[in-house]
Amino acid sequence: MESLFLYMFNEILPEIKSLIADTFASHTIRTLLLLLSGRPVASAATVIQSRKKENIPLNSETVLKEGRDQISVVPQSFHEAVGKLLSTVCTVYSTEELRALAVHQIGSPVLQIVLQLEMGLSKKERRRKEKSEGTLLSKLTGVTQKDEASAVEEETTEGEKEGEEQGRSFFQNLLYDSVGSHLAESIMRHAPKRDFNMLYGRFIKPRLGSLARNETAAFVVQRVLEKIPKEGLEEAVKELLPQIPSLVGTFTFSF
Image (tube, rainbow, N blue to C red; front, side, top):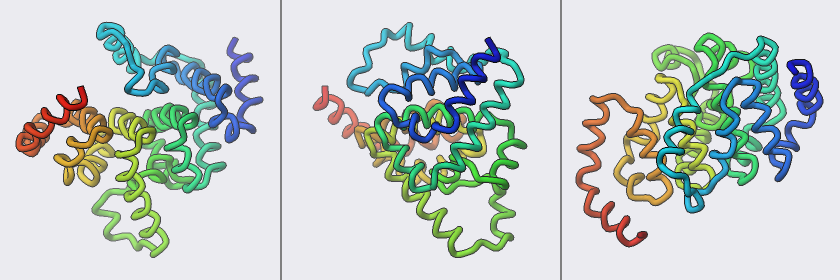
């Protein structure tokens, strides 16, 4: 069975760019990625449902949420295949193409899983990937693995600065996109602590109130509130308290 999955993977990999955004093939790609990484295959279905169509009982939703954090033991060859795929996706997609994929109705759910796999790498592996080919997260958000202190000391070219600014602008817009906001939710849920803190500090915290009032961005805010530590949560609640009347009014109107 190990060999069969690897044969399938090797056959698919050269065509990965066209298959990720294909209406039918994307389902197979998602399932294969989850199998290779040891994650529950059931979670493949949850990333494609629109919020309006979701009708999952609370107990089932809880099971799925807990299941996403359970990683099964898989052969080392599967880990190597995942690493090969991450490198391939980083190579075959330009930054512009990757950002277009983030808001693509078919391709974005696959990208969610690929990003989860990348963010699940060890800190050492992510740093090495950042230096060699860049990471998907840095291309989408402009946030890199560099230390903020060392980043100030290092010389940054005008092109790099412009690229980082474009990434930050793109991620800010992603929070309001009906498709891209699902990807933003996934990023905030699965980002390692340091990346989460940088993303929260740059994109969410300064506009927490206005984001909470937006019917799309509010879902990303929910994921953030689930994850920030107690001190940050207390600060966030103080920021949100003045917005409560308008939030309740919006909810009642929408209901």
